[in-house]
Image (cartoon, rainbow, N blue to C red; front, top):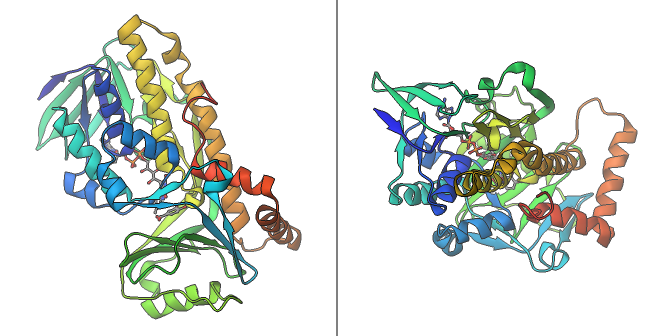
Length: 397
Ligand code: FAD
Ligand code: DHB
């Protein structure tokens, strides 16, 4: 199959699907190539928290209806340490903003439905995706599907293929500066059948390591604990997992975690990664293909959304007024917001995780920072405005 379109998009994750919807709204056509099946992308358990600007974007694009009905709006989060829980009132500290707990795979279902309803093609299950002539005016994406060769000829390529996709590699190595920090820990994530333990998410620091208590529905809970990134989920029986959660969540408030049968387990690596530049010729990276954050700040999907808002406007400007400046400055502008999100994710990770072999000064700094955040309105406000999400553009346009 050969397609001729305006924007060829590689990857049907949040970045690729949102880019297609944003472009369609501006009357710009796209075709999306995705290596996985529709069932696979709609079933993979990933993120849970949507920032305020992402929620507004989904509503504005007309894909927020189910999220508003089935998602859970949270006005605060809790930080637990030293045996006590402390509430950060996001809503009050940010002039009325909040976050939405709504799983990424549900967002994906809503986005895929809307993209297909626009009449946009998503080719699922493609293989051997490669990028050609990205520094010319007619770049091409080649791929195979069911053994047959296919091609997308386009004006621009949206490289939205996640951390392991081919798009970033299509930028010449000499033009790329890649910043990488690997954390010496991972997150062990579970889904279990239990009622919620708390009305709001709990980020807990303990001498045994970090715990995040999140939720999905009134009967399904999502929780994580800091683990050795090289560990194997099979080393952890249900009893061992709950014993670890109990030990880390020990408190003076008489509060206990609600436990129940665990039906999903997985280990996630923790990295900070930024590729500068995010563009080369007619190829533009967006989302995890250009940057990765450790999950502690709940920023990954939200940074992807910020990228494609900028990118879609730049592409629309090109078609409408033949404007080149916003395209040329895409990477510089996008990466500025990305660095803010990267720093916040590192800050949350450093404040809440314990790393083996640390000196006592570093440990006490962590506690001093936690004490500061829960006792100073200025410090709490800074955390809150980052957590609910900084504006997509105003600050960084
Ligand atoms: P992806 O979601 O990775 O999508 C890329 C797509 O490209 C995939 O569908 C992939 O199959 C496809 N692809 C790859 N290679 C090719 C190829 N060669 N050809 C075609 N297609 C290809 N973020 C938050 O904002 N909030 C959270 O609470 C949060 N929690 C998280 C919890 C966990 C456990 C994990 C793992 C992540 C979490 N994140 C969170 C991060 C978030 O999930 C990612 O940042 C987000 O998925 C990035 O979207 P993307 O579209 O850039 O990339
Ligand atoms: C979830 C994931 C996160 O990374 C986070 O910071 C908060 C919640 C979640 O999956 O629910």
